[in-house]
Each structure stands twice: as structure tokens, then as C-alpha cells.
Amino acid sequence: MPLPVEQLRELITTDVSRWRKQNCVSLMDHSAQQIRAVLELASELKAHDLQRKSSVFWDYPRTLAMLFQKSSLRTRVSFEVSMAHLRGHAVYLSPDDVGLGIRESVADVAHGLSRWVDAITARVYHHSMVTSLAAHASVPVINALSDQEHPIQAFADLLTLQEHCGRLGNERHLAYVGDGNNVLHALLIGCAKLGVNIRAAYPKGYEPAAEYVEAALQAAQSTGAHITLSNDPAEAVHQAEAVYTDVWASMGQEHEKEERAAIFAPYQVNSALLAHAAPNAIAMHCLPAHREEEISSEVMTLHNTTIFDQAENRLHTQKALLLLILGL
Ligand code: CP
Ligand code: NVA
Image (cartoon, rainbow, N blue to C red; front, side, top):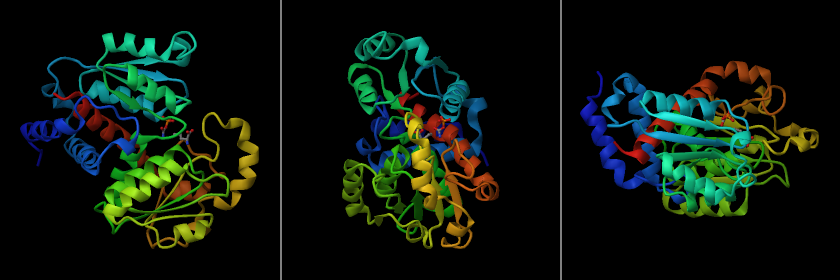
């Protein structure tokens, strides 16, 4: 039974006060209510496949500038397709096009783009680049991944967890095994704010940044989420409903790949590790995956559907975020 377009418009309008014209640079800046609004709208957009009717949402085609300092498949494609479904337009800018902070200062790029487009998304090496863009732009800025955080990935991860395991709250149990990186940072904050229990395990020296751990623990005080951090993958995975991993060497750390491969070997998500999880536990990966490194080929094959549901959900959650930020 399709949800009437009017009801969807209401969902967006009701949430306008929470997201309208806001940046999405870090989940630390956003409330549980805002995170839930993205997930709720994304679920509706997904369930009712409304892209063909979406011209009823925007009265003129909104535009999104996409600044990329690093490679991307999912983020670039899901944003471009989101804008196409919403009858807007995305402008992809490669590192060679812009030379952010090299050819031109971040401030001047932000000022120029603000005169042409309705929103900017940026994938950067240094998180300070995206905060600086947000500080200088007069249009909303969305973090498309920085060295510190990948907030838009967390929206898709949380929606996938909800779809496969159920309502997001204290009854959920997610394990993360691997590097204490940008993906874990966003997950820690997202889970803590929604009350989802999260246990993370990583090698010594590769822990998540203290500011993210502190912010997650702070948020968990009011939601009751249990956050457990250790160096023991089996302990983290014990009875978990979902086991998440990410690459061992992130973009910008390629030169550490061999050193990390040796250190992270005991943290591979494979069938032996998944044997500690709850029966029917799902495996999750933000992708790109490196089979036989952070995830075994066997687990990747067995959990292919879930992992690509996660990738698909990038589209629905980013479309929802764009509608909430840009309004109708
Ligand atoms: N997960 C993710 O952000 O993928 P891309 O690097 O391909 O955009
Ligand atoms: N941690 C990874 C995520 C890729 C989507 C990276 O930053 O390269």
C-alpha cells in the first residue's frame, strides 16, 4: 500500500526544523531524533520506491557539488543517483579539478560554490578541511568521509541493522572488529545516541580517538547503550547479532598496508570468529572489501546479501538526508 505523497511531504516538513539547512559534518553534532528522522524517511522512500514521483517534492532542481580528494564508488554513485531521483543535479569535482587548499584556498572554494549550488558534499584527507568548508560556505556541507569520521556511512549501517535485526535500541548488539578508524567513530556515536550496544575490538595502538570514545560514553549515559572497547575480537563478537569490519589500511594509509596486515591478522572476520556470535548473526562491511584480509572470502560470500543491502542503503539514507537538509 503506497504511502500517499502528502504523508511523505509531511514527514519531511515536520523534520525540516531539525535538519533544514544544517551541515552534516559529524554525528556528534546531531541528536538521536535527527538520526531517527533520516532512517524513518529513508525506510519510507525505500519501501515506496518514490523516485518516479519525486518531482512533486522539489519545485526547482536543487544542485549538489561533490568535492572528492579520494577515490569512491558507493558515495559518488549514491549521491549522483539520489540527485537524479530527486530531479536535482550533482556536479562531481575530482581532486584534479579543484586542488582544494592548493590551487585555491578552502575558504575561496566554499565561497565560490555557495554562489552556485544548494549544498556541498566533500570527501577529504583531513577532517579540518570539511569543518573549514562548513565554516566558510553559506550552504550546507555534508561530510562524505574524512580521516576522522564517515557519518553518512553510519546512517546506512544503522538502517541495515534495523532491517535485519529489528528496532534500534538497547536490545540490539553490534560488534566491530578491526581498525579504530573513521567508520568506527561514526558507528560509536550513532549507536550510543540510539541506545544500540556496541563492542569494538582492535589491536593496541589502533584504538578509536579519545574524543569519539568520550562523546559515545557521554551519549550512552542517557540512552543506556553498553559500549565496550577491548583488544579481544572473540569477546567483542560474543553473542553479537551483527559483526562489522572495515579495511585495515584506510585511504591515505596505503604505505602502512603490510605492517598493518601482520598486526591485524588476528582480527579477521572469518567463520571461526563468527562462531562466537549469536545464531544467525549477520556480517557487515562498508566496502570496499579486501577478501582474506579483514574478511574471509567465505564470510563475504555467505553474507553477500546483507553487505550489499548496506551498500544499497547508502542511496536511501542519502536521499532522505538531502530532502531533510534541502527541504521541499
Ligand atoms: N563505503 C564507502 O564510502 O564506499 P566508497 O569509498 O566507494 O564511496
Ligand atoms: N576506513 C575506510 C573507509 C572506506 C569507505 C577509508 O577511510 O578508506
